Image (cartoon, rainbow, N blue to C red; front, side, top):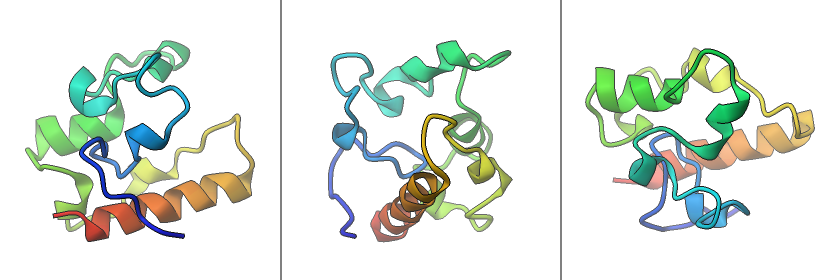
Length: 101
């Protein structure tokens, strides 16, 4: 598993340009200020919890600068993916965040 170096990494470590929805459906969390397309499927949320914590509350560039990484916010799983795929995604996010500056 190799981390992707890109300017489109979200604060949580997701590589936006590796996503099938980028850039047609979603421009990425950075450009959308934590309001990705998938929020329309989440109840009672208008900003991603991880983005809110990282950028708005802690004022960090990304979660890799947080001493609490990984925190409870990373426990949320994509219900459209298998447990194995969710774990792969999580590990890639952690790798991307630890390699980012």
